[in-house]
Length: 188
Image 1 (spheres, rainbow, N blue to C red):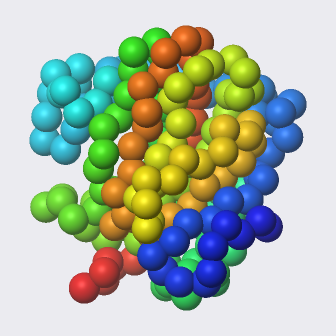
Image 2: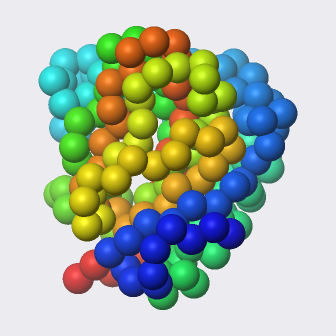
């Protein structure tokens, strides 16, 4: 695991999770599922100025179990790194950003929805080859607005209370797998 900063909860870390070939297998598997325009908490899909992308919720079914297992391993490593208690992983979100798509600065917890309030760790796995799109970088505000590398198959894990965004994709298509680990007590 390549850790980018000191072991402190107001940071983020990265780990290579899949090879490019495995990323292509994930893309083929998840592209077969139905996608919809994304919404922001409580909003209508495709009606937000804060978010413009397509999402697919990955069922927690046997045929996707290998994806969930690989993500869970990274969450367990990250929980040890951040010294967080986590209980389970929420349903995975497969996100596709086409040209002019983005997700503006936001956090993944702190909302009224109980499922969101209890999020402890967030993860973004870059599935697309870095040269297949321009823009679209994951930006995380830990101490400054640092951009995560676009390396295919890299998981970036960070505390869910950190502000982050997906920059606008200018050319090509960026595909990412988004995941959250929760604990019933959240950050209270």
